[in-house]
Image (cartoon, rainbow, N blue to C red):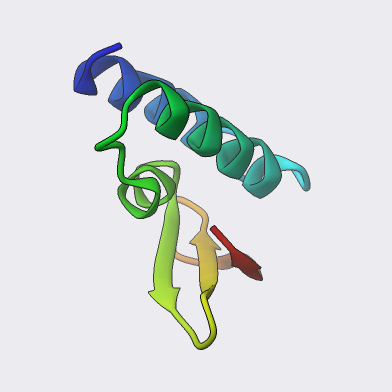
Length: 80
């Protein structure tokens, strides 16, 4: 797969960010893509899926999602 494929998948997933399982689906796909492409950047993929990603402590990341008008949709703290 190429970068364009990963970008297309992320753009499609971004439209579903109000779904409660969205973050888990994106993270699981990112892990699968990393197996396929060793240089795959999970943080960039999560950002392309609609999350503001900030590294927290001890390997955790804070993922925040906003809707199209800028209202907070959700915040997650998880390992990527």
